[in-house]
Length: 120
Image 1 (cartoon, rainbow, N blue to C red):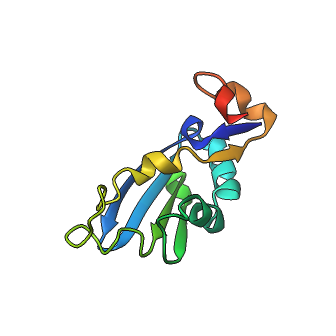
Image 2 (cartoon, rainbow, N blue to C red):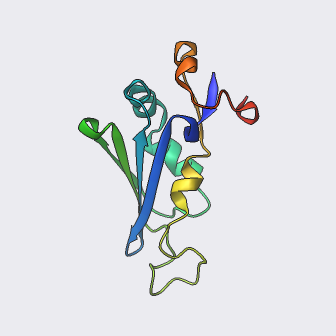
């Protein structure tokens, strides 16, 4: 079953110069293995292909059931140099949560609010 990350995770984002930092946290422990499997550096790089000019690094944080992504050269020079509307990358967390992932059918009952029909 395909769902948006929004249904299984929450996220926060910010900046360090020209590098965007996006943290992704599983809403329930059962969703963490799905996130690790489905949300790879390559998929995040592709998801942000229009803004991420450099490499994407990812770090697993199993004790927090989270991942942290660094999108290098993604902010047009950084907060004080960039002419972008979101020079600090604050909206990137919401953008990542729109990514679709495949979850096992047996996890469907854990989804809050049911299955998003747009993600099918």
